[in-house]
Amino acid sequence: VEGKMGVSGSINVVFEADLTKYVGHRPSVLYWVIQPGSSVGGLGIGVIRMVRPWNKWLCIWGYDIAGGPPDLNEAHARQIVHSLLGDSTIPVKIESTSTWTVNDMYATRLFDNRVFCMGDAVHRHPPTNGLGSNTSIQDAFNLCWKLSHVLQGKAGPELLATYNEERAPVARQVVQRANKSLGDFPPILAALGLFDTKDPEQMQRNIARLKEQSPEAQEQRAALRAAID
Image 1: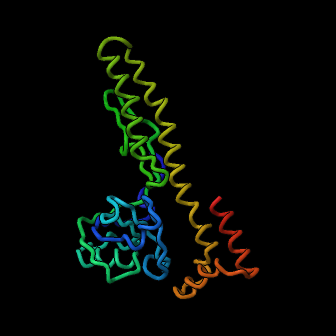
Image 2: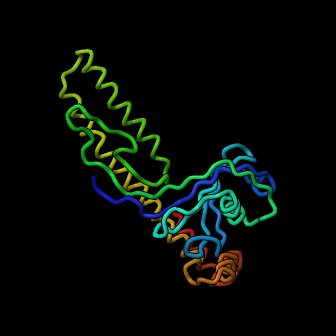
Image 3: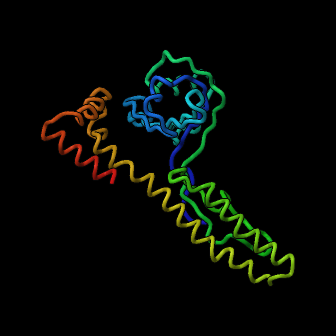
């Protein structure tokens, strides 16, 4: 294998809450949220993903991996959700919690003799670009039809070697792509002015400056467009 595990830590909280007043007029599947001062590094960046409109959600939040996984009791999970929402008055029902790590690792060899590996066993990466399930299904399809042909005598065992030849480069590519996409976020955050200060109130002012008509705001908007492009 090549790469490394445990690049950073993340928390999943599945919860029920009526967020219609925040998302009903701008429906989507996934929302990036910034609440300066609320999380790791003071940036307060997280994700709210819709599970069922508009009352079941998955909250994704960060934690300092150097300190180990946090104690995710119900009170802590509710605090995380309220911090990300920026509204502690919303009734929240916690359904489940879990932790996971951002990884950057892939296998260079996917089989050895009669043992074949696929899916998360051979490519570990963050969920950016939605490559995990897609790639795992493609791994399975590639291997299964070849196994079927060999077992039925329609092809020789050398066909199985092509599984590694065809899928190992894909494992490397998706891991690199997913981690590169994750690395595309810092320039966006820099353009928002989140790296210019550690003061949460100043971070809020830096974000609000985007709506101004000053030369500084015009430069900031140009930098943000360039970072997103």
